[in-house]
Image (cartoon, rainbow, N blue to C red; front, side, top):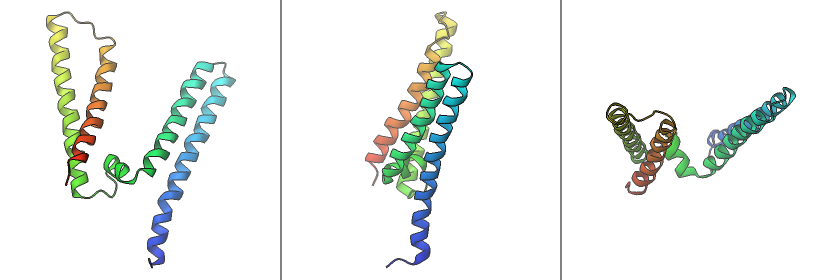
Length: 140
């Protein structure tokens, strides 16, 4: 049987997670209310959707205990921290590679710096997620 302090420590993150999710939902309703009161339905949909999406993401990730520890680094063991370090390094290397390619295209090919910047951000995040999956899968 676990000591009372340990059982309370296990309950505390659940309450904190629920509180955080609730605050995100409350913020979503606040953003929607303020944006609609100012006559901006587009901002209401985008802002409310972002907060609700973040609340949903936080709620789902916390239920995936090993994955959540791997992504957040919270209470991770040595192998999980190493996988996170390797994934972060891979994302950094991807960002540097894309930056070098972008500078080269800008200098030599007269490439416009428009939409590809957003694509670069998506590519760096995707490289982190894929590397985290890869290194998390092969740890051990």
